[in-house]
Image (cartoon, rainbow, N blue to C red):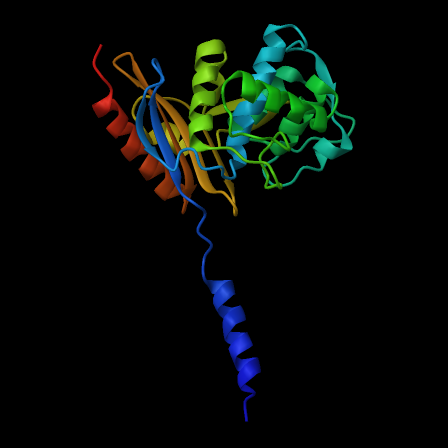
Length: 267
């Protein structure tokens, strides 16, 4: 006779393994020029930002270049920690020397975790010191609900942000570093003699007027994305957290960006 308790435990284990995890959903649409919020849903809920974290890393990198803390052509030595970063990576080796320019390109375009860590170490000496810088920068920009524990966005306790903060972070890049924004829209390029393709290439290719984008995924975050788009000299930023797939995330960002252009007051 089947042991009822064992049978029920088996069923529970099977169910937990087959039921997909749904990350919390949040979204926001803002007018890039004025900062006016055109649509918002759970936009101030602190969630896992995943690869959108790299917007903060890039903002700090652009700032460091502009203030001459680092030089774009300076070579950074790749640490064992950076070389061992998992998942999306440029594939650098410990001891290899890579220019700040190439680290920025790979972080912005490919969304590489190893180059994000290498950038953090090159700018602040360690990733831990760099994350303190990110927290300080977030406060200066008014991103009050973001706290950073790493430079790449892999899930870590206390590493949280909001759709609102990520939208205004993209706006800050566009406002403060307009000459660097283009790198977030390059579909294909090279970094450290390697061909790289934008992690958000589908979004950049399919949405009319797409200028810059960043996407990211972890199981805890779901499929996250941010898009800055321009039509007739009008610009919209849209952020989605918690998409169920790349396809649904792109569809939702496209739908909401269309909504933003319709709702944006005509100048």
